[in-house]
Image 1 (tube, rainbow, N blue to C red):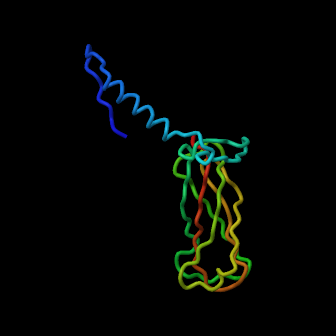
Image 2: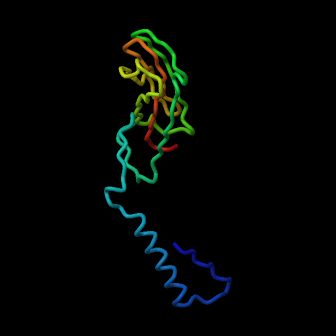
Length: 147
């Protein structure tokens, strides 16, 4: 979108300048369409929040559980937490996925459980259901309403 030069004080407004203003307004109207595909419905603890997708907040991060290969016994549980960069207005919707790192054998059978989600942090546990060598991290994606 082009920037419209501001007129000098006392400068008469001519048709060309008014035309530039109308074009700029039309460009803004076209980019802020009210089409339904441009909205996100985020079902928070405070009910469904509808907002433009551009007005939602997304945070993606990873939490390394075991960086180097470590031996675990069956049913080992490791707690973790991840603090968001900035807060959400309501607790966001969070998805967690375990990622296997090289040299693992037991992490083929791993479970990630989120135990608490707040406006600034998520807590969870990683459970290794079989014994063996592990190296794993958890990828997290949070989507919510910004403050």
